[in-house]
Length: 104
Image (cartoon, rainbow, N blue to C red):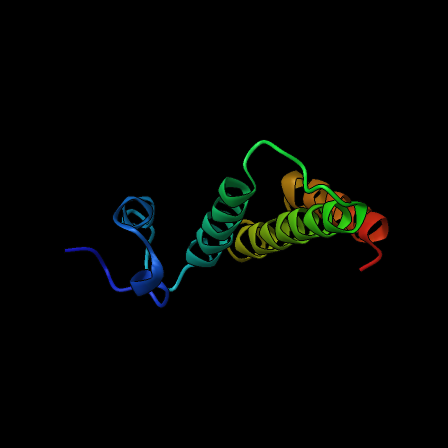
C-alpha cells in the first residue's frame, strides 16, 4: 500500500510508482505533480508544433511556466533541507533569469 498523498487519486498506476518513495509532507510531491502534468502536456502535444504562431507561443509559455514552477519548488525544498548552499545560489540566479525572460 502506498502512502497517502494529496494528489494521489489523480495519478495513473505508473505515476503512483514515481511517488511511492517520497516522504509525506515533502515538497517533492508537488514537484512531481508539476513534472507529471508537464509530461502529460508534452505527450499530448507530440513531436509537432501547433500550426499557428499564437498556439506556439502559448505552448512555449506553458512549458516555461511549468519549468519555472518546478525550479521554484526545488528551491523551496533545498532551502528547507540545505539552506545557504552553492546550489541554492545557482538556482536563485537561474530563477531570476527565467523570470526576466518570461516577464513574470
